[in-house]
Image 1 (cartoon, rainbow, N blue to C red):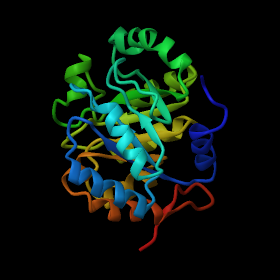
Image 2 (cartoon, rainbow, N blue to C red):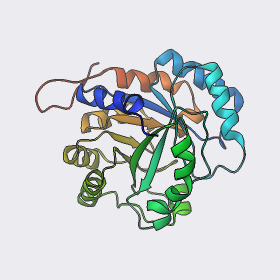
Image 3 (cartoon, helix red, strand yellow):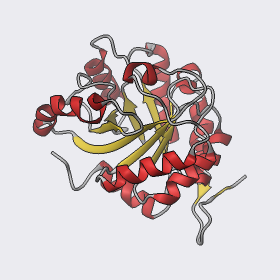
Length: 262
């Protein structure tokens, strides 16, 4: 069932007060145990807000085990980021119920949702309907290949804005601008600013974010949640700098999005 209180209520309150959130994405098929343990410890130390769990191609039965391991080691909320209708587990706290609104594949707009709806209706998960918008990141990503859809061209801010508006008007509760895992080029600040200025619901941005400077730029442009994955998988210690970039971002009054101290 959809909860009135919980993760989403916290995200709405944070957006209202200009507070930004950092998310670490775990792909079960890419994890190495030692690095995962180090990443979890650093995430707790640095105050990471959420973990997203999932990927475009989860080919084994690691999901339940991974969620259990994380739960035992740290208290960070676990949110499923499913690549298909089979990536479901009661062990998480919530799920992004994703509709790929940037594409025209009916299976990812409604088809797989029909399959998973009975499971989710009976589950204890907090269900957050999310408009997923794939943006061209300069390389064909797993999401693009597996979804059989075209991404939004990186320079077409107007298409991104109209897509985001449609998602909000359809009643979706969050939007996710993603250049995809391993993207060469992350989502531009101009697109983030255009989309953020057009909608009132929380905006997630991810894909190809490798530096604290890019995090700061995305936050200034209007992102509410920043998702990092590949960079952390390669070097977990980067969490410290990335978390610091989020914490250093301070909302200010007026039309300014915020500022980075330093």
